Amino acid sequence: MLLHGTGGNERDLLPLGRELDPDASLLSPRGKTLENGMPRFFRRLAEGVFDLEDLKKRTHELADFVTSVAQHYELDDKKIVAVGYSNGANIAASMLLLRPEILSAAILFRAMVPLVPEKQPDFSSRSVFISAGSFDPIVPASNTKELAESLRTAGADVTIRFLQSGHELTTADVDLAREWLSGKN
Ligand code: MLT
Image: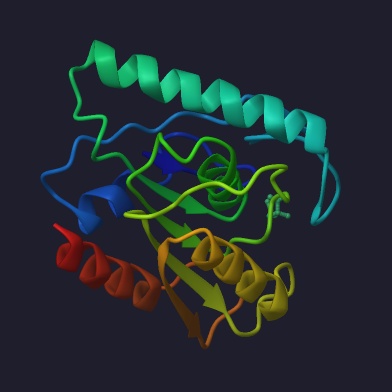
């Protein structure tokens, strides 16, 4: 499942999905919220400050959508991997925290802590790859590390890499993610 960044759409990450796994079925929804005409997966109050009620609502909505689409297209619902960039990575992280049963793995590019769940999820047998930019002006390194830690505490197998880049996605991100994913298949 491909989840685009703010201002993107469902077509943006299709080439990335193909590069990560040429044989995978790709599901690429468009974020349903608009910010000044830019699609997003949930509302925010300011950069990095999220509307938590909307985030929770949209996370459950997306999780339910994935479940029904997996049934409709007869996809193996035990092998759904979320691949998100920026805002898309944040809703993927939120789905891991609120609906851990939906995803078997996640690749999060430039993610931050989306929310703190009320009850500790169980992530044993979930794998997460987090790729961060050392010079990212939007996501502080400490925040990405905090996300990795909270997923680890809940039992996930987390790999985190810091690249010499900013918020933008680089070919090094894609290469590392592909390598990580091929080791999981
Ligand atoms: C977010 O709103 O999810 C983050 O600030 C990342 C972004 O979309 O710029």
